[in-house]
Amino acid sequence: MVGAVPPQVSYSADDKERIQKRTVLVLLASQGSGGIGLVATYIVSALLAKDITGSATLATIAAACLSIGAALVSVPLSRTMGRLGRRAGLRMAYLVGAGGAGIAVIAAIVRSYPLLCIGILGAGAGSAANLATRYAAADLAKEDRRARTISLIVWATTIGSTTGSVASGFASNFGETLGLPDKAGSYLFSGLAFLVAGAIVEFFLRPDPLVVAGGIGQSGTEDEGPSSREAIRLIWENPAARLAVFAMVISQVTMVGVMALTPIHMDDGGQSQNAIGMMMAMHIWGMYAFSPIVGQLTDRIGKFPMIYIAGGLCTWGAYWAAITPPAGQLGVFMGNFLIGLGWCFGVIAASSLIVSLYPVHQRVAVQGIGDAAMIGSGALAGLSSGALYTVFDYRGVNYANAIFGLALILATAATYGQTRRLAKREQPAMAS
Amino acid sequence: MDDARPSLPVVLGFVVAAVLLVGVPLVVARVVDDPEADVFTIEIPDGTSALLAAGADVNLFPEELDFRLRDVLVIVNGDVVAHQIGPYSVDPGETLEKTFGETASFIGFCSLHSGGEITIAVADG
Image (cartoon, rainbow over all chains, first blue to last red; front, side, top):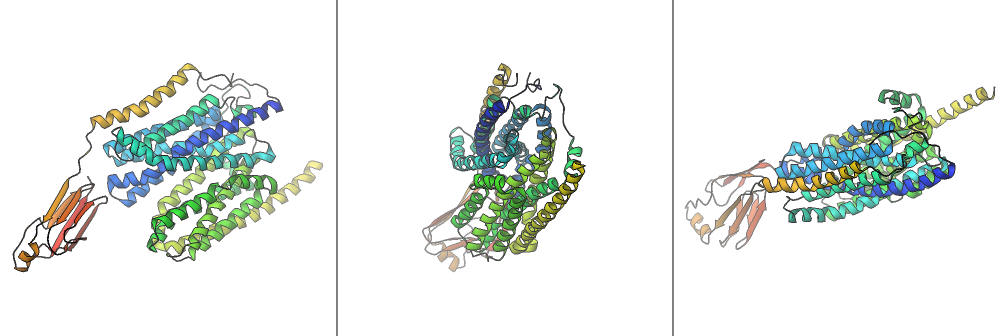
């Protein structure tokens, strides 16, 4: 039966290692395909919305629907994974993503903005699946290799994103030869990529890593794990978990905010489309290209120092960008690169930290809440960036981003001290 | 067993999903007519500037132009001097083609109307 909880099977350490290697390979493949789907949707969303409505504001809202959809799906996705396993959850999210992309194709044909937003919201489920994949890869990872494993999945997104960017244009042109309107082909391609990602998960993510790790199916019953409210309480009661979620939120908010505003800032300074494209490339490079190194560093020097560095990179990058005039290049190039790199440090270290804090049956629900907070705050940052830019201008928004980075540094220092004190207090108690 | 192969209904489900994903849009695209963009052409004949200088009203097009998104404005200047229609300036012997991609409404200078003004509105739809 589809989605049934499998009976408990015991796995040896060798079995688990073998399964983990296979799991990572399968998830790298699904992540690559999912990344293609995500970028193919992202690239055309704002353009098509502007083509239909003629409004830049409505185009921004349509683009933000991708993040809003991902945030909305995060919690149901984690509930499904907690109940039925990673495979069932990821499959469901990719199928919803494919369906959303299909609706967006129809919206492009009938030129309906509301239908386009519904489609993009649905495609956001594919984005949520892509994000949840890093946790699926970490289920069976050994403690000293967890961040490295997560970073590999983050890195696979780069391959998918690069391929998706190139293929989106070809797909749009191919769609037109099939009789579809401009840009609809890109959505069709996106839907197929999500479907392929779902099929890879469905056919090859066997056995389910969460089942092997003991996260579900312990008693052969459908144990749902903690509810969303309990998951929020679990995070709230644990200072290190609070820090992990805070780090993910700060990394995402600063990354989305600066990515949305820098092109406008550079355009105001009369900079060319090539220069703006180069800036975006450096930002994305910072986010993904070094992720395997960041993962290795996290396993080696620890999660707290890496989150601390993430705060430092965010502050440095935002400050550098803030003091650069619209016609300047070095500051916005390097500022955006550093903020992207800060995102990479923050997300990999925080994801690894949150996995290490909870027993396996509680992890999935906590991860879902963490992702919903991260993506939701990013969507809010994307939606509000235009208004904030009008009120505070680029400099003001980036000073705020720098303050967010400083807040992360302070929170990391405070949490590190708090967790050390708690550990010291617990040691004598355990000894007695 | 959890590592068993997916069942036939699941395999068929993926196949059906793929067929629907590709097939439904292609069918809808054939059923729904793509709204045709209107092309509005303004041809400025040779001698227009001389007529305007003599105080004549050339009356080539209305003082208010209404467009929908994706409509196209084509200005063919066959005259010996440059002409300005709102934000669009066309040199002698040149042709300008503008596809409207954004809703907008503006009032600007027009060298072809005695009032010296033109209103161009681009609406959603």
